[in-house]
Image (tube, rainbow, N blue to C red; front, side):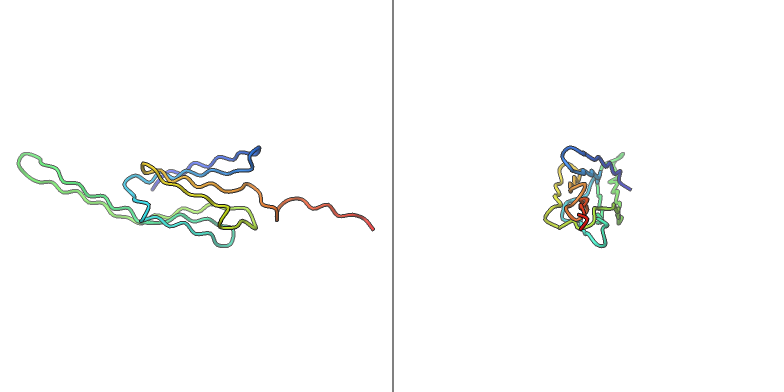
Length: 108
């Protein structure tokens, strides 16, 4: 399965998660958020043909994958950004949402 690295930037209030997905096209990846869990899932398909001593060797690998990360309570889908380049999926989202910010209660 792919490697996942998660970095939090407290100053920018941002979490960046990078998923290594070699040989996976972005069309085969889906990102869902449900009950404060972000899930990246999809299917990897790898095929290669090569010639070895006059024989054609065909290699195929197929597999489904799924990785989940917690996200802040109250996060909105438009606050989650995703981009994929060279087999690396980068997902960013806020570390905290307004729903999580401390609320001051005044004494009456």
